[in-house]
Image 1 (cartoon, rainbow, N blue to C red):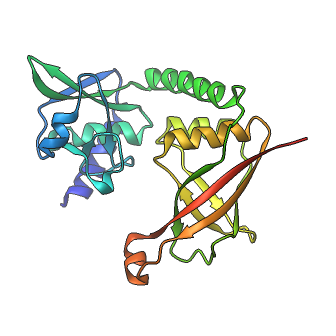
Image 2: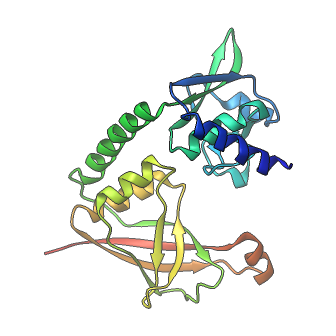
Length: 246
């Protein structure tokens, strides 16, 4: 039986026995990571467990995009089934870097179902309040956007962010991270903005404070279509202007 099938069987066994019933802490020495990245980690720093979905192998990254490096460690295989079972059940799994006797360690906390529900509610309330706070943007934003390979856009074209209740983004922030999806005039999804947490917050806070978002494509990077198909996206630049409703 291969790793993926074995993991599924073990997840089912844990589910049948009630899953993760109490908070659990796992500690291990980083292994299989990038030394330069490990040296940058500070005591108590939050790390990312990747992938976010159930998997038969997990990795620990310093905050940033895993696609561009930043690996701190591979999670030892003996913990994979426990983590997968927790993710399958919707339990919270957090990772942090710690130093014990001046040696780096990875700490993974797996919350019980009850603790996970309590944590999610607190985080959801915090994000909802944060996005709804009074805010007046001082200037427009120019930032990158990942465009779909088949976007069909030209420089100067307008794109849009659909209206969603603040609770939608609060839930997203608590369950893996906010991704802002953008659409063209025909309602086709054409791209996304993720990993730029500060920019996302500014956009959403302006939106929930009554500002209209005037978004235009400034630049589309020319790219070989085969490279675009492999990467799954084309990088572009957009400008977001904020217009106050009367």
